[in-house]
Image 1 (cartoon, rainbow, N blue to C red):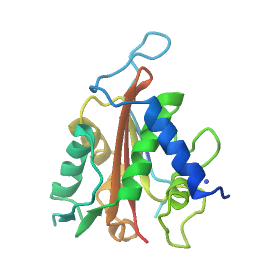
Image 2 (image 1 turned 135 degrees about the horizontal axis):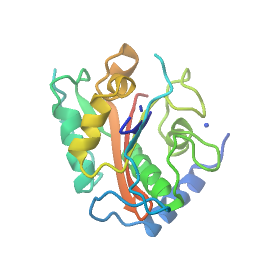
Image 3 (image 1 turned 90 degrees about the horizontal axis):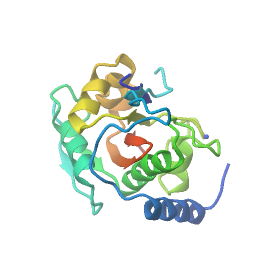
Image 4 (image 1 turned 45 degrees about the vertical axis):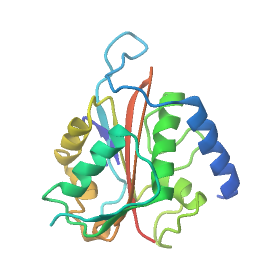
Length: 204
């Protein structure tokens, strides 16, 4: 699910993905959020990406994952939004690590897409990290992710997702498909290429 102030793919070993995540984390350390300039000197426009699937307030059980400040801010909005239809949501360590790695990979490699430069989508990375998605999910596609680019705060990216029809369906679980996705992970990273936001929701 992409978001541009608008939006909500086989197999390598899990160890390869873990190594990739560690490498990415070593390359990028989150810094303060700000809109970054594009290569031509113009301010990059915020973007939002939508999920590819057409189809009460939540509580949370904390995991051992340590979110950064920006991730915590999105998490609070995700959990407390009065229009959130998910119940008993759980921050999942695997989804959290993949979400942050996705944000850091985009920030490091200067791309903004559900598909990484090597051709894989969010479902693939989550599965490779050890999270077992339902068998009917697209093996190397996207049934789980929303992303945003160049929003200067959690409030702004959350507001953009909520005001995008495709994003609302995912982040607020407005379709039954997403209501059962009660595990989640949130990622944030910033570089000279921009500030990147990732929300992954999933179910086993």
